[in-house]
Length: 142
Image (cartoon, rainbow, N blue to C red; front, top):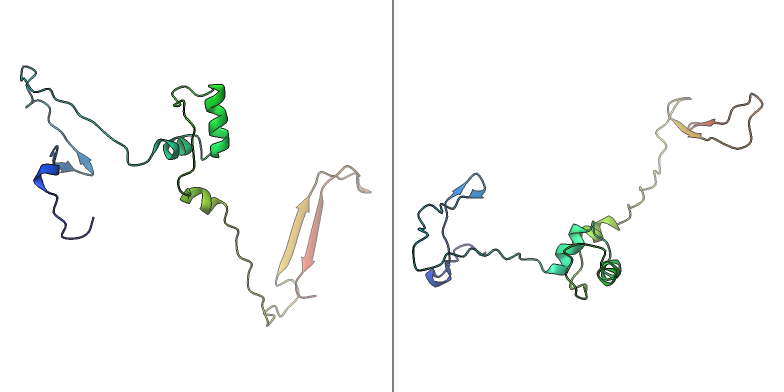
């Protein structure tokens, strides 16, 4: 909401005090013999497609529709799910890292100052000493 916005009183359905990020609603003041029935309704701001997309670990909508057709998930509504807008989390998961800038000046000035190592294996062909792992060490100075 914008700062300074005041909610009109006719829009207010329920008021409850806030304690540590929790709204406490005291239902003891509502008597069961009152002629007016008390009904509490919670509506989620996100649509059902986005909600099920998140619940099912961000699976794509084609697979969600397959789950609906085969009736594999209990409680999943029997409808066609469509992508309304992009999922921010899925977009962030598909971002690739940028490569590092090239160093124009070499700052390594002595032997064994910086080593690059790679250990790989097991390999199918054994070495002379019957070993199946290999460690490659490269000196950055030379």
